[in-house]
Length: 349
Ligand code: HEC
Ligand code: HEC
Image (cartoon, rainbow, N blue to C red; front, side):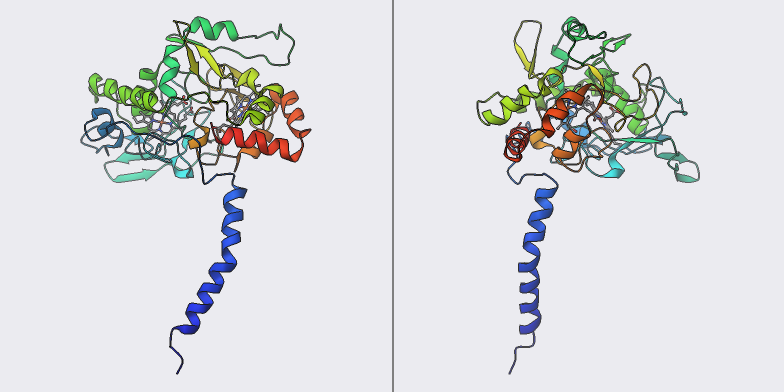
């Protein structure tokens, strides 16, 4: 007698065998290596006050709203671990040209908490979505002085390399943080994140809690610091030959001259038509973005770029335009093998 489940089981086994290559193809197509670069390390979370604040789900009584996007930092910064980035569209924050609700001028949240309940604010046609960045090494930027960044700026392209980075001057110093590089200091960004993402104002949060959250980001940076290696040297030298390193500078000196690894010059560059948001964000123009830090790339799952429009690293590179045009032309002239070497180097940063 036939075993009643024999046939279906066989069919399922067959389906799985047939699907396995498809899964493999999907995984490689999206450029996410199953062997990411350096392992991620989290500080002693149980006792970390900053970690508790980062994962805490804020309630209305504690200050959430009335306008907000999510009720915790970790709701958006969690890939592949707390403090990481965001990969899902509902984690992307909304910005819009017209709605000037706060000092940064362009922020437009998703939810409105009213006496009647929670309203979802419809996405305006001019709304732009921005991907939450990976935060593991972001705190290192505070150690780089304004003067260092200002010296890199080359607004008139005096060195004639087609690359004219701009430093963004703000009342608190030179901008370093955010896709647009508009925020100068980490504690300032964290305050704004509480305010814009969760609607928690300075009156509703104790300044010590801001300090503790900033401390978490410093501790994450301490244990996940990028260490230079001589591995993937073929990819590394192509990266420099192509001029990627003009903007994605491997390191900038801190005030003692010690290297801070950033793979960014912290300047904003005109990235061309494809990446143009279509409107200015403060004094930063539509197509201008801060050079993305690449020190976390191995731990940042797709999608990439400010709007998450690149499904893999190859697409992220090929969407560069504007000041990066020469560099990307050189990328297209590489052989298949050379492109693979460069991608491998990036995936292991
Ligand atoms: C609704 C999703 C969301 C929430 C909640 C959220 N963030 Fe973010 N975060 C983002 C997005 C999107 C960006 C990029 C914003 C930009 O530059 O326009 C970002 C950027 C940042 C940056 C700057 C990173 C860099 O590379 O310059 C820091 C720091 C940060 N967030 C910290 C926090 C902290 C701390 C909290 C909790 C208080 C928080 N975020 C809550 C979505 C979120
Ligand atoms: C003119 C400056 C400039 C040059 C040259 C340049 N980049 Fe970029 N790169 C940027 C900026 C700015 C961004 C962020 C753009 C955005 O998100 O819209 C970026 C983003 C990226 C990203 C996506 C990072 C992320 O987290 O989403 C990768 C990968 C990257 N660049 C690799 C390269 C490689 C490889 C080269 C050389 C072939 C290169 N870049 C050349 C400025 C530059």
